[in-house]
Image (cartoon, rainbow, N blue to C red; front, side, top):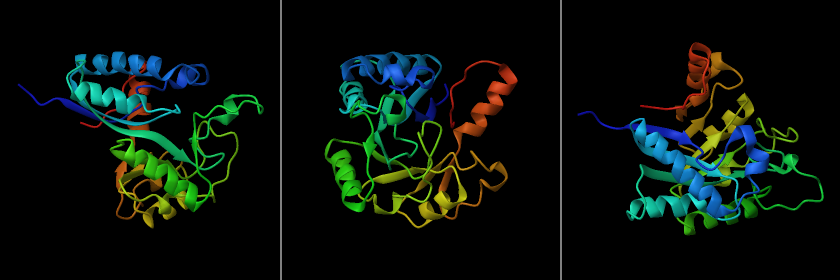
Length: 222
């Protein structure tokens, strides 16, 4: 016997290859798709997953976690950050996928301290295990505004932050964050300069695995 694997960064309800269309699906459809993916992980030996955010106005990953914990469905243990709290034009702002007249509440946007606190309290009361923030721009950003960091105001639950530049990492070091996501995404040689934060960089492992295998792989921390 051997212990099960743990993947500490998954997005069961988000498929980057088709995210704009998938985001428009219902919360139930996302939860069912997430269950299918979670079971696929389990077939590969992963017994615990940490889902780091969904793009949905409701809480499909929290509902999925609760159903798994209650034994209503079979699958791995699930730990979740329900949403991705982001400033406007930050990595978690998906409005660039849609026309400017569309008002689709799939992103958790917070541009000042009061909005950040409201989002964090909503995550907490709805059962989120972690708070996920993106304090700089990123791959899905319609624009770049790296100086509008917001991680320092997110308090109340374990906090993991995304940062793609050095300024963002400096802000996270002063924040309540305990983990830094993708620390070497833009500067791999400087990825370790992150103070007391626990580094979690699936992107490096992912790109190396893809380069060696030529196939889509699962980012994992064992």
